[in-house]
Amino acid sequence: MSRLRGPQTRQPSSPLLVRGAVAALFPRVPSGPALQLPRRAGELVPAVTLEELKGAQSRIRERSAPGPDGVPNVALKLAIAARPDVFLRVYTTCLETGVFPSGWKR
Image (cartoon, rainbow, N blue to C red; front, side):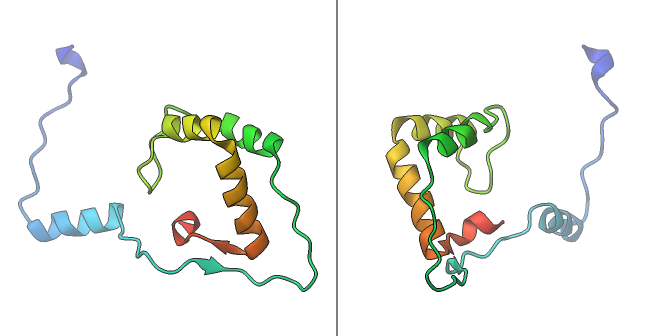
């Protein structure tokens, strides 16, 4: 196992350098109002179907790192399986109103 370890690296001595690296690698995303998209008058938006939701659920990789919300993918898949009605309502409402949480836009 010792052959796999690389040489010891020194810790950065400049707090300014560390802050700059952290800011570049982990930018702060301001939480703001939801993004509202314009809709055309009389445009009908079909509801999200259970088949579409299950298809999206099956494409979620469980062993991937969580997104900006911090929710583990396995928890998201379990939540969709437990309450698909809630997810269908939320996604359909977002499409109908054209309003999406700002966190989804990252």
